[in-house]
Length: 328
Image (cartoon, rainbow, N blue to C red):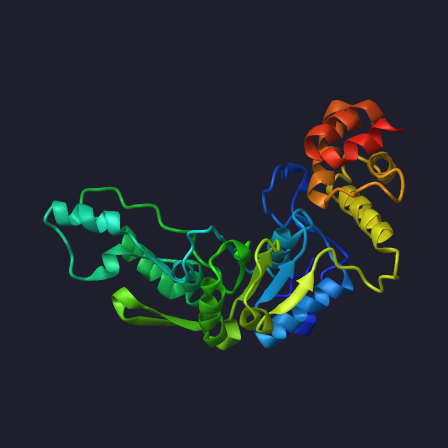
């Protein structure tokens, strides 16, 4: 498959409905390999608009519906570097750009080799690698350099290839001031490393695509929301009123079939879906849960998925589905 490439226009972002890059069967747990993704026109349009405007793409929606994996799949299709940062309650806005190793500085002070030049203690962060990869690689080498000429060189970070897709995961976990502070760097495509008095700036023609996810655990600042391209997942095309659940179930089957097409036919995947969602009242598992259930069923059953085994799997992976499976 031909990739869009780093010099393509936003209109060239046209992955197929079922995008595959690599072996999805080998992707277990929550590994964000981007090996498989089911795209819709609505998803493709949101990414094109984000690429055209240079704004971050904010993905909202329940956990397990492909917010984080969309960033990895997009990087695979574009053949760009993929970088991610998982936000915690302790995350500060500076953490996205660089980090200062104060323990290393303290150790140097105790050993009487403290440097006045802070470059030895500054480690490039997510946005530094995304904005100016060559500069980040140079700073990374300086940070890892040893004063002991006989010491083995510290392992260097992965060499950058060019443009990046950046995932900032679960932004709603951060303090409210962090999203707005982050937008200063994203909007201007630059930030200043205070300890080095050095400005890191991106070439607008090679700016990264920034994907930000939120589980809506905390309200995001209005100023932040205004500056983002927003998309709620799952996203369907021409969704008819009242058919959302039907569309969600059909997407689950498509995702399951694509993940396991080398091991299971569509009929197998559909039988599992029908057992988990027997009627309109039953809750629907997320794609992440459904893939786990299907993977486990393939390992624990023969050619026909057994309802009792599916029930046992559902008890530990999708508890709300257990009663629905029990009734069949």
